Length: 192
Image (cartoon, rainbow, N blue to C red; front, side, top):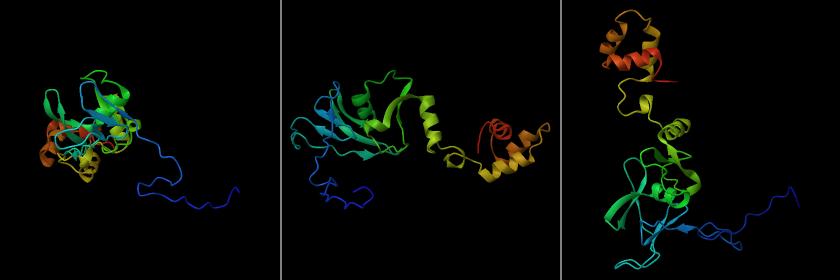
């Protein structure tokens, strides 16, 4: 009856509802990467038996310094560390449109979410706009090379009146370049 609380179905160890069919993952191959299949969510498995691994063995990846999953795979030219998000995007969205102009963009900003529905080929400009939208762009104090804080920037903008030589004096005081201080004073950097 509508409006009544229904009991939650029993679930197995994998979290699937018991008595209901579970959806199987879709796996695809890449012509240039023989011996492997890539799943829709970024798992990679061997399609052939290896000396120490059976066919169907799922490769374990690792997280690199930027937070992306990588896996060491055997290619026709030797073993290489490959970014899993790039493999998924190529397998499910086709080859990279232009090697110089396109990157893989994560729609939700989570570099560990490699489901094909979260990935797309995007220009550098589109990818940067995404990073700003979901807050993963390291601007302002989040930039590890930032020499100023938000309090410094607010103070500079309150003090700046546009007098001749003022930008140079502020730059010396805060230990930044003239160009960086100019950008702070005119508002082209450090947007709130």
